[in-house]
Length: 466
Image (cartoon, rainbow, N blue to C red):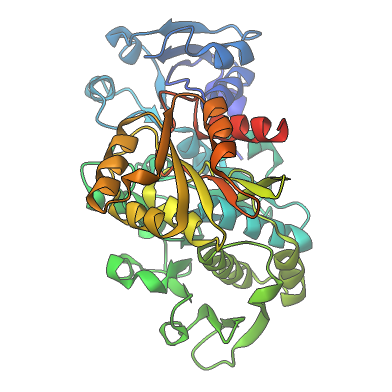
């Protein structure tokens, strides 16, 4: 690996976008460690960024907050762009005009990383799949590392822990993948869990969003591997792939010539068309709820088998795995009512998956900020499954209300709230013994919360205090 200190020491670097997710803080700490001269600029104010600024108070950093100045994008050696910053920013265009290199944390990571990467992306499920694959591989290879789109961390934090032989699993968002396009790099083993409309407040259209996801395999070689969801053939991803393709399918095992599928209540893996399918385990032995999580398990099984993990190791982890925080996370049983935290459901499709995972009556905490996504299917699922809806104020909630009204289900809306404490209190009024109270917003969190994880933490804390 190249000498990081030599490459960064004394360089004047503008970090664009500190944010509140923790990734910006991690990037700044990394660059400060290697003696870069740092200027951090963010359109948010000092007050809005207080938690992030507190985390960096011991470091010598220059801040320009509440505005961006043109000079900071011209008179600098490099710009590090936070993934949330739109690529169309006029300040980035100005930097390009003056030939200032623009980087991302994931771009720098891939540039210096000595290990080959197993990368997972998708609209939903990528965190669960990446974490599950990490746990499976770690069972046999203790030095495995997990990183990428992980809250409060930067992939750069892993660089000093990685050797050429280190098993490395990265969760990659569409915005992070855009940072790889410049370098024309894709992981050695790649997986797309699924693709549904998302982030249409950021992308021009759905096709633009799909294009960002495809970066995970666009630069693969014929010796690399790609895992795709066979139940989403309409996304037509295969035509652009050069690598060796494996599939997973919930719906039809005949779609899988090699990969994982479900048949007669069991999960199987097929090494090739000519081989005999290997039984992995019975679906009933899994602790994860929901069909969408079964699809996540199939993706993880396929990735682990490509990696060469023994079935005995695989089976043991699958049987014990209970999921990851903020994703259909069972928080508490209180007076016969189960409370679930699914705050990571930031689009309507994810909320539909969550609602489909329960047979019990549901009191749903939903809504919030808009990502310009359709709400018809969510409204139908609410009418079918939900006893009462408590909405967080925001544009997405207004869209959902309109769709519920169209199908004469707006009577399910019991209250609109601006605080999590109000939502939890209201849920107690409507939930009965045997019900589920489910936080699955199907919307973004900005406006009322720092981020979706803050939303989930507040819910969890309040429920545990009941």
